[in-house]
Length: 157
Image (cartoon, rainbow, N blue to C red; front, top):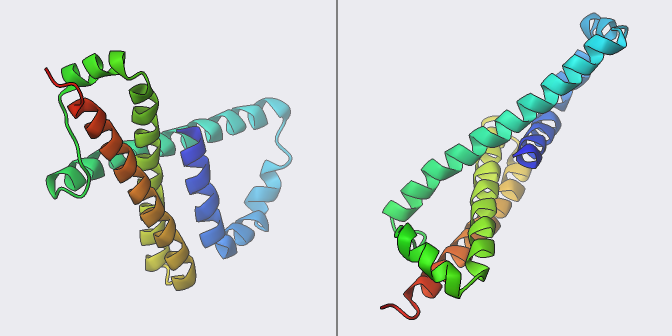
């Protein structure tokens, strides 16, 4: 979650660099630099918490996007968790595949959201780059889902 939130925040800073530089040059930012150590620590911890929450929100949006992709059959899926847990005993790799699937889904969502933001801002070349990353992670999500479904179909009783 933290890495996803940090990536989102970092790319948003790049997309809005002129606003960031204006903020850094502002008198408010200069007054923040003079804050004592205790308050500075609280601000840093709060910033880290906000980044984690951004990552968590993106993860949950990915869960909603997953439901849409399953509904339109853009990714294979078998939601029989009892069968998944039974197959996981025979195929321990399923736990790893499941984690990789979730990571790919979250990354796909992250880059899709960033693509939308960069399109709104009219940064077309950056949008194309982000869209390409979205597509890469879509295929990664699809590949992991396909492998999980294949393993769940093996040795059906």
